[in-house]
Amino acid sequence: MTNTRFKNNRQESPERVSELLVRRDQARRQRQSRLFRILTRSGIGLLLIVIFFFSPLFKIRQVSLKGFAHADQAKITARANAEIGRHALLVGRSALRQDVLADPYLRNVRIKSSLLGTLTIEAEEYPQEYALIQEGQVVVLDRQGRVLSSQIIIPPNIVELVDDTKPLAPGHTMYGEGIKKNVMVEFMALMDQNTSDIRFSRLILTDPADLKLESGGWVVELGDGASLEQKVNRAINILKVVKIQEEPAIIDLKFNADPVIRPKGES
Image (cartoon, rainbow, N blue to C red):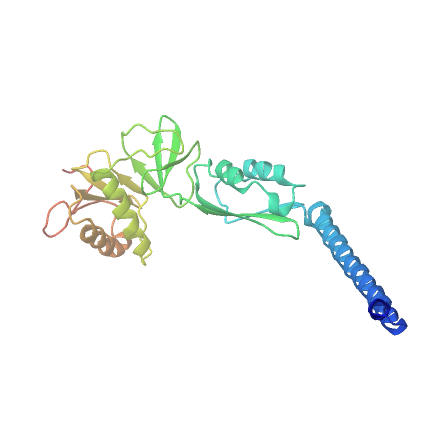
């Protein structure tokens, strides 16, 4: 009797069995729905990855150069064109930057690639400031003495530098620290601040104790370059007057005294 009652108590009622079956079906449907969502999202994500990395829409299709004036744009464009067809995020920026900066004119470059397919190279160049003429070659320098190029034509609006220092190859710096370099840097800084129409065409640097400037046929003797700013400003003020009234001559500013103007050929 007791065993029969115990046995009957272990049996599930039909209602309980039906409820368990419904729960099992619901759990199975939830698992299937969850699996379907996972597979769908994974498939969409994989498709987007494939489109992003293999679609031609995101590959480099053109090269744009900005800020270039004197650097070899043809050579740089040819190097950059090697990146065409590469994904915008996979451009070899480090190697490209190193190759582009091999041009002596370039101080710095910034390389950007857009997902619209344009590879942009923005340049910061060293300025052309001096032209040293030796043995028929024009060596173009910046104010620090960096050699930018060696050519046969003098660039326009540049100061001719007269000196006997042996020129170096482009990319090297000719002048170490010393009087000549200091004069080159200070003189060009003064020209940056010059608001007059007086321009100097030549800086004679051969003898650091006997520096000279030339402007429109006039020769300005500066001596050893001491008090260069004061002497250059005095020369500009004098030239504003005498260039209109007199024939070109020599303006002697070597000493801390009143300037002397004498005809060429007189010492």
